[in-house]
Image (cartoon, rainbow, N blue to C red; front, side, top):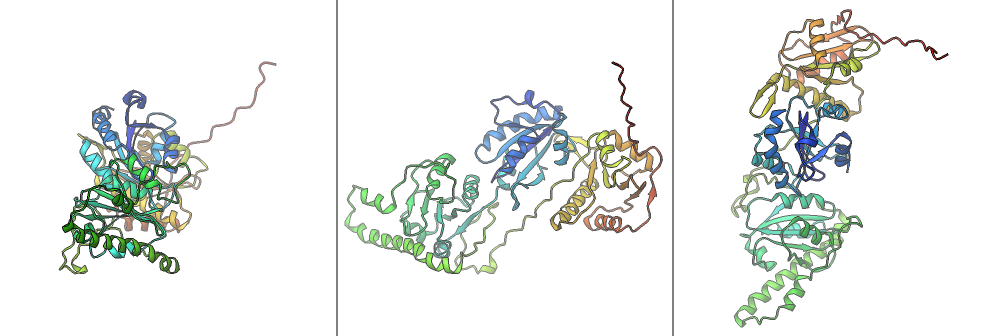
Length: 480
């Protein structure tokens, strides 16, 4: 089955899972990467429904080229089944958005719940790109110039009210070496200070006392990377070494056209302001080194924003809503043999199983009921909480209805609800069912804690549910 998704490094990625052959569905020239469990790990560490999704997914991959990795994985392949299980793939096709987290090599994985159109997929991925671009205006420009002068600064002058996905990706790639800011063309003082006459314009203020430099190339990712790399002192030695552009002061000196007398006063005033900005950027370096860099608050640019009203007070400004981290999904046991190996063997200890109902199908794929999604989300949050604490906890697994072992467990333990949570310990021969009607984190965690502490009544596992070990046959030497 195919798991489609977007895979990023510093930007997000999308991964598609479905029931078709990756080699047959996407050609070698496709913009969609064909991955397996091993190649997915390398990327991150640094069904008819599937066929219907292919055209939109191909177009999304081309639209996101340079912004996010778009990949597909065949979950029917035996070698990929464990990986698809750890990704919590339940129905097909499944779309997962993978975002970088604060822990290297441990990205955040989210289910994509939107429409399966090219535009909706592309918009969701772009919105998931981390935003490290500070929005500034005439009033906050000097504060930005005076801070963090041990690294370079990049200022994008734009006539747009939003931050583009490309700008956010570049800011993420150079986040340790260059501080990014964006300012509107309406901020007249800043525009005049830097002599900006067209939009967009990108200006970099190198660290130390070097003069500001204007980007004069095309606004493509490769051209902008080539320009920014020369100011990123912490970049690897393999980073491209582009031809250095002239500082703005030299650009002005090279201009051959004479300046009319009536413009001389304005030019001198602008040059004076520009020189002051450059000096402000450089002079703050000593005090920054002594006192530490000023922490900057990044604004959420998911919605267009206008320049702040000069009469508005800080209390009047809307505050961005926090975006919670989504914990990774619990592993899924897709086959009965794996369920028996993990939880129903004679020597297996406590497991918590989420026995899932049959997923319904609609135009966008397979969908689980709300209670099932709530139960899976609660278990994922509890597991992540214990993982962050470093506390030892028994494993949680989801068991989709297509796993024939699910029906065996339901029949043996007389479980009749659509979504069933049950703890089993085959070695000690007991089970305990979740009896609640709500599957919120509080309710499920109370039940899990009782099992951890050995509290509450347990039932006896019926004979025949625990899989007996295969007897080893004695060696024979018939050839003798």
